[in-house]
Amino acid sequence: MALSRVCWARAALWGSAVPPGLYVVRRLQFVRSGLTWGAPRYLFPRQLLIRHFWTPKQQIDFLDIYHALRKQSHPEILCYLEKVVPLISDAGLQWHMTELCTKMQRGTHPAVHDILALRECFANHPLGMDQLRALQMKALCRAMLLTPYLPSVLLRHRLKTHTTVIHQLDKALAKLGVGQLTAQEVKSACYLRGLNSTHIAEERCRTWLGEWLQISCSLKETELSLLLHNVVLLSINYVGSRR
Image (cartoon, rainbow, N blue to C red):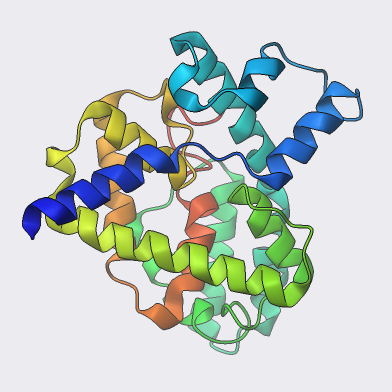
């Protein structure tokens, strides 16, 4: 049983770092036609070959491009967090949210306790999963490399499902132990959770993944909106990730 859990966790890790979907393919088409930022090299193999056929250089280049796509949504997500501060009824939570947003703007990597202090805001109004507005969900989908071109009810369902799967995988990884993962498995796990791990040393990736698991394993199912936002909160200012 333990071996099967390990195999399942590792299979999920290896598969998780291959993000292409309808959204990414559509963006690649736009890039090729010159409707977004300049067309990068290696577009053909990136669209038609699975990750195992990419050269080592292509793996780095392609993952950088995918991360650049999801990174475009980060300012919008942080802006939404600032806007909801007046909607938070508790004065203490208002202060914590303002402090967190200020730290993010200054380029400071937040501590685990800074993020967990706000879990109540993400369980109910205004940032609970069922309270997120359409534009917020679209931005969060882009941050997860999920297509944002769906009705609100489907966006909410996809975000809930995707975040729940990650939460379950986090519990399995916590039981297994980060130390049991190979370097590639650690980097793949970090990339899935929002960190551009391709340019970060293995030990720093292990440290970051440990912080993520500490947050994730502290959350209840009703607080998973915080885990969803953590894709941005925990990754955006991490040393070496700002590429």
